[in-house]
Every structure is written in structure tokens, then in C-alpha cells.
Image 1 (spheres, rainbow, N blue to C red):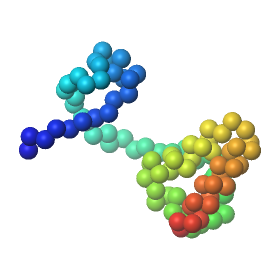
Image 2: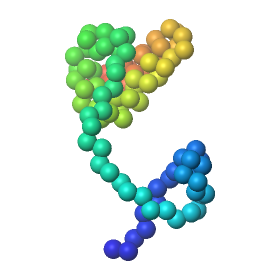
Image 3: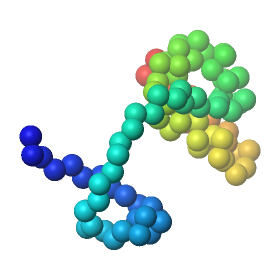
Length: 97
């Protein structure tokens, strides 16, 4: 054993913890067993309902994989942006399903 583990910490977290970059700290790592669900925007749910293969592939993705596709749709400022991001997500899902 004897290896070194490094964990990148954002400046915001370092400031809150009163530590500087390069400081050595001890941390406790705890397994998070709570289920993480992605809230699917209605427009994506509607598109997935029309494409069972894409829906099946989407449902097989991890939380992070789903979030990567959902976030640009859900966070789009305009309807055009959301529609464009929906089209990109569906194109990716169809290509991989």
C-alpha cells in the first residue's frame, strides 16, 4: 500500500474549509446510497415516448449520463434553445440505441 490519493477541491470549497491549495487534509469518504433520479423535461419525455429504442437506451444510462442529456434541455433559456438541445439529445440517443 502506501500510495497517495489526491482529490481535486474547488476554490469555493477550500475557502469554506479554510484550507489552501497544496495543504494536506484528512477527509472521510462515505458511500451515498440514496437513489438519484433525473427529472425528465416534458418535451424529452414526449420525444422518448415516440421512440421506444431511444427510450430504452436513455433508461439504461447512469444518473450522470441522463443528466448530461437532460440539463441542456431543462436549463435552456429560450424555447429555441431547448428545442435545439432536445434535437441533439434525441440524435445521440437514436445513434446509440
